[in-house]
Length: 233
Image (tube, rainbow, N blue to C red; front, side, top):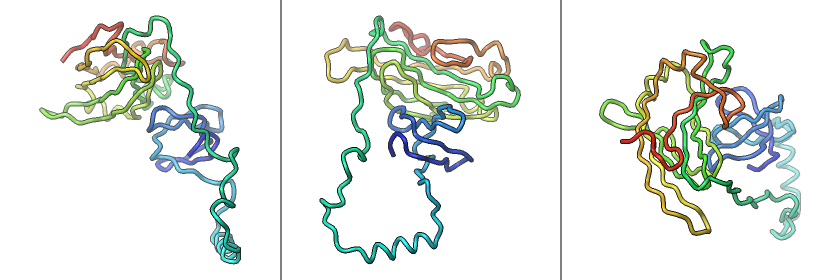
């Protein structure tokens, strides 16, 4: 799967073209309205622009069986047709060497707060890579909800959920290891933070506020800010 591929969603109606990626597990799909929709890579499938009717598939197989043997070098794709594998290194910003990370909850339709579903994100607001684990408590046990590596000064989509799931995420824990790649850096302590998510706030419009990370209002929980851990285990 590469940028420009046409894809469709597996678990819901819709699709579009691949416009980018977030981390290793999330693909950004540009829909027909021009909006980038984050989806798990496992939840999308690449589709072609043509119709794959049975008769056409049979004809294609028949044509293929009539073709002479062709060497691997002859069928090698042209360089321009190969997917782009180069990725620019993340840019660092002034003041970003102090760790800041947040859990963010964004209503999908803030104008219909009584009915809307929500999206959750891990926000890395620093010049460090962060490998995180997001867990929730169930009685005396814990369950991993999401994990991954987040590049500097980016955010990663965690999941979509409804109000029926609020009790599941009420008691959360986030663990973080921070580092830089291909350069020396100051060692940062491992973050191990409890986050108590108040379900009542998801019913109040004023708790979703303007912020620096999203175009729409969001409920932001601070995990660590300017190297100061706000909530501790």
